[in-house]
Length: 391
Ligand SMILES: Cc1cc2nc3c(=O)[nH]c(=O)nc-3n(C[C@H](O)[C@H](O)[C@H](O)COP(=O)(O)OP(=O)(O)OC[C@H]3O[C@@H](n4cnc5c(N)ncnc54)[C@H](O)[C@@H]3O)c2cc1C
Image 1 (cartoon, rainbow, N blue to C red):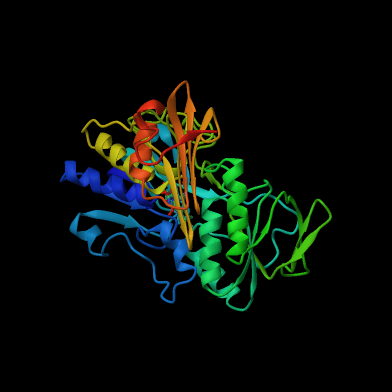
Image 2: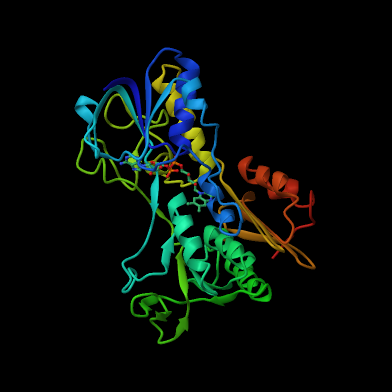
């Protein structure tokens, strides 16, 4: 089969690229290939579906979209080999697809470290819809669930599990959770707040092995302590899916290397989404993947576009816990505002605001985000939304 455009991966990056190509090229043939048996769905909603009664896939578009836009689908079809020089894809089901141009939007996989006993029943990582269904089915029978990894996705999963009525433990190897978004001082406050909200929080814990015969029954830490659990959810980050391109001419580092037009090192082959490394970053974010897909789709179909360095920020809404974090955290001088449950911080280098945390109330996040991205002088904003004082 020959197409003008072949897109491997129908996550948000691949789907958005197909949409963009069709916008610019009404005639070209497009095929969207995916290992998963489903049309594009909101992967980010998997966490909230942990506690929903209705777990049907949250599809991104109606099933009719593909036919209406003349986009062919190859679902349940893993690409097992790519021959970049020939723009040829070999599928596990025996089919071969050639295309004038190819987009690799194969995403990432959950990182599961090779901890002893990790293969036991009851240990999960959530990346795909299938993972969610299996996890839900398993935890239905049990009460005690441990989330291994206190990053933002781990905390959001912990919240959903608590809502499902589970006894939830949060485990991290650092001495506080959300280390990428919080400084130590506020991280320690969050530890306490999570405990107050009913979570068991275990910090400075390195997992040595999972206990139990066939199924997990506990976690043994390397400090000699252990806890009893019925199920474990691993939330330890993701790794780009690089197997397909590993031994090819397509250059990789931590992800597939692309320029700002989302072009790989091989002409006519583009990459977008969680699988890429762009502007020296591997992002792993929904909106970034969508934007990259749009830029790739545009360039693939002859309309020049570039992907700029993204303006990243994080927001956590977890019961009474409200946190917003942006920029370089924990560096430079600290400016504080503390009032009741609100603890806001600005991080300042050479008089310029380079990072910020809003803790307890995030209503000023729009303004504070601009301080960082517009490189505002602290002298100009110190009194604007809160009266910050130098620590
Ligand atoms: C539970 C969860 C919660 C998240 N929450 C957030 C959030 O709140 N905010 C946020 O910004 N981000 C969040 N993310 C991350 C976000 O979902 C990803 O950044 C985004 O989905 C990446 O899109 P993508 O299209 O690059 O890749 P993916 O969505 O991973 O899609 C890639 C597709 O390619 C397929 N594929 C892979 N290899 C092959 C092959 N060889 N052949 C055929 N098909 C293949 C995969 O099966 C998959 O369907 C979350 C992720 C998860 C798992």
